[in-house]
Length: 80
Image: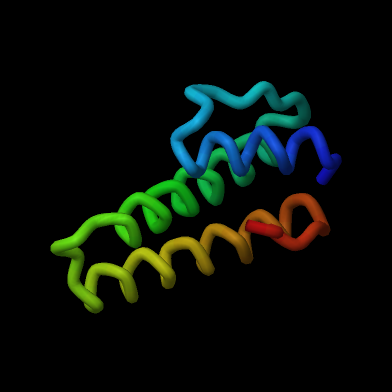
């Protein structure tokens, strides 16, 4: 992942940017989008006061699942 895309991704996950521009094959873009959204869901949950450990665990597992798909499709590790 290029540094500019990593920066945009961090800004998106943290809620400081509403969208991310990404180009590539439909398969790779889909894998990126899924893991990006899973990362944002986890980040948002971690910032909630009333979130349960069970919910965090479910979100971490979901993110890991999407990170594996991302790695399979792009041959790159998910860095967030």
